[in-house]
Length: 235
Image (cartoon, rainbow, N blue to C red):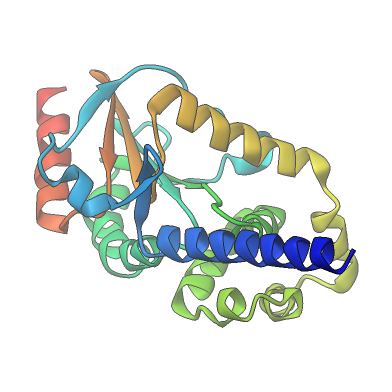
């Protein structure tokens, strides 16, 4: 009996270790190809900047948070995990330039799509969607700015951020208990993998009159700007 308990304890520790390792690697921007972790930037280095894809981005009602002009010629869907450091870097350093040159000028509209790779990121995603539209971007920015909520692994740390955005304990509980929202996020997650082959963050779907193209991994702003300008100029 003692041997069985000891084996069970060892197996449990192995599972915890594997989950922790997976969470760490995905947070660092790795994707998993045939079970092997590959840095998303490196994985795309030898491939085309963008590849054509078909299919629809599936979003529930609460997930349709659009920044920019609805009539913009391009729509950029940014698939991101709140646990991903490369996603945080994009949001802090690339997005402001994108907003300045494309979103505020009416050239593109931007949709931040949560692609949670762990339970903590899922909870952060849900809380962001439970906030009003005008607080959504600010909340995401605050979470990317400081990662204590993720590193602590405690619900209360994340709850503290939600309270700063005027959510009370009842609001937080109602959001946590929103099974429809959980289902919608998971549907988006699974359909993105199945339809577009997305298996790492950040990843981007750029949609225009010439259809949809997929960009995987962090890219320099100059390269991204050149690509978007070409998409717009070609119609």
